[in-house]
Image (cartoon, rainbow, N blue to C red; front, side, top):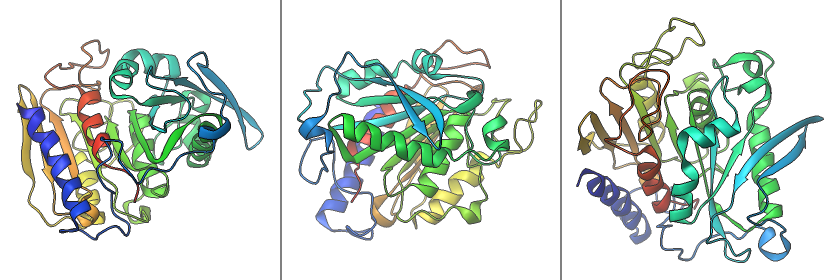
Length: 324
């Protein structure tokens, strides 16, 4: 029942946007209802002469003179002519595309929902998301630029809806999702980070439009601390989850009070609405949860939960919004 309430919250926000009540209207908003495949989509060039199909699973891509790569999953609904939404799923520090694919099991959700999923590979198993993490941050790698290049490459090769590109990721990949919402809001419609907060200076995060956000975090995460600060390994001196959420509430111009929209076992999701463009901000807190992907019980960094599926809940949001 809780997930139905959360889904209704996303759908009502989108309906309000399309009906012209509340928010900032079509200019810079989060867009209209997307899940019904209705009008307003932007077909990529690959819908005309693309070569992407289900036999393609890994693609090499040169960016700034460096050989990069990403894995890709094509759902059964893909016919090469009908634009499908795209989710970018980023691994954490020390991870890679294949492990992220295995740990999140997002391919199955994408098959059921009709999404293409791409799993980009970070250099040296890391992403430059600001304070986090590793060689990519230390070397100031342009990972936002790389992500833009991945989107363009997929758009040329395959048939995607350019108005429905979303970002998620675990840990360092969650940090990157937040950075993308700050610096690539022209191509990213919404984000669903897991166990990763905003890693660039909050004052430097100035998206060109309100960005819908749903963030998942465990209170016992000992790698990216729920209350912020430098964890035992000092991978990053990160801001708190509360500060990250407050930042998005302010950027999206939200004036509503946080409302509990889902309560299942250890999980409580609160949504702040009445936002510009109906770009709501949702925090799903896993009480006692570790550095884990909700819905996947196998976790090496603390207790996980199956009281909620991060995949299903973030896809509920993704189903409801597109770029204006």
